[in-house]
Amino acid sequence: MFGTLNEKLEKIVKSIAGRATISEDDLDITLREIRIALLEADVALSVVKDFIDNVKSNIVGKEVLKSIKPDQMIIKLVQEELIKILGLNNEPLNIAKTGITKILFCGLQGSGKTTTIAKVANFIKKNSKKKILLVSSDIYRPAAQEQLQVLGKQINVEFFDHQNSQSVEAITLESIKYAEKNLFDILLFDTAGRQVVDDKMMEELKTISQKLKPQETILVADSLTGQDAANIAKRFNETVSITSSILTRVDGDGRGGAALSIKSITGAPIKFIGTGEKIDQLESFHPERIANRILGMGDIVSLVEKASENIDKKEMEDLAKKMSKGKFDLEDFAGQLKQMGKMGGISGIMSMLPGISKAQKLMAENKISDDVINHQIAIINSMTKKERADPDMVKASRKIRISKGSGTRVQDVNKLLKQFFQSQKMMKKMKSTGKGGMPSDLLQKLQGNLPPNFNN
Image 1 (cartoon, helix red, strand yellow):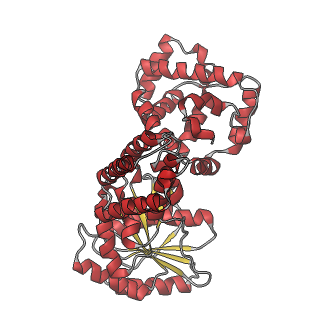
Image 2: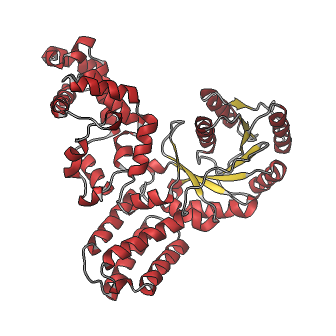
Image 3: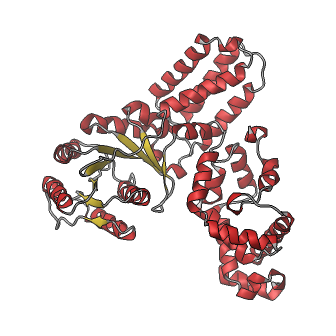
């Protein structure tokens, strides 16, 4: 997400960085370039106009151009304005202290609404002991009801079976009664989507909202729709008063216009972003961290959180012990690749490191992708236990067998082995380990590819 905007803003920031003085003409050129970058990222025009006006008035009002470090002050003000339009703070779901919390989800068909509801249920379940009930009022698409039921089973969350009722009002009232009778804490309510926003859909949604009286009304919007997502949000907000939004498919959105528009248009915070299709690929939305990503400053806090959530500490400690004895085989190498996958793969990790555009270019130039990692794991899985323990025995005939078994080429097997032996050599040189088994000098070894201000 924000790949295109990030690359452009990084260039703009770099063009003024380190300059002792910045004239008003320089400022106008810089702000014009930022305006173009935002518009090309499909940010709503009204949002862009307010953004530029606010940044300029702050720069002039605070006499930034006459300050000792005007370049740093301008970058800081741009960052602050980005945080402001993204929502200032991370806001959690509004969960009632007593009684049933009812959360209504709405959005267009194809926005990923049903899957997102299951993701939210999974998120709540992982972070609390709340008893959750899933409800679908989509009487037009039985497949949508079935999808939510199947997803509910995957995460062991109950689905309300309304016996194919054709009345959304009846489904709403019956689900509330069922939730009260069976002492559920949270009711997540799915609604029908449409290809376009229409009056019938809005009247139906209004009826559900009036009967349900939800504590939260969440708009699920596809980030790929850009500023159209903001226009859609405005229409939904006028009908049922949106309290928050969730952006889906941010992993496929290189522009970020929806995220930078939707909060300003509705006034409602973005609470989550969907980062992939898997049930656990839902992240809390932190405006400051996202603003830092946009400006190429990275998001190390989120990276550390992902690591603590997904990395098996015992596995890392066992690996550290093996490394201290000079042992590191292909089984361990595969384990490291899988740990990276749990953290969102190489692309997910790189997107949180400072200098994101540089990192992405490096990945593209070296043809590094999550697919390559999956192929490497497949190659290792095609080896025998002896071969994984002793890679030196993998010669010509074995390589041919392994490549056929993994659906790859012999060159791919050679490349994997070369990478492994390089890693093994590096691991043997590491004598000390940090928390969770992370090699303490690994960061230094990566330092050549990181920007100078990484540790600042």
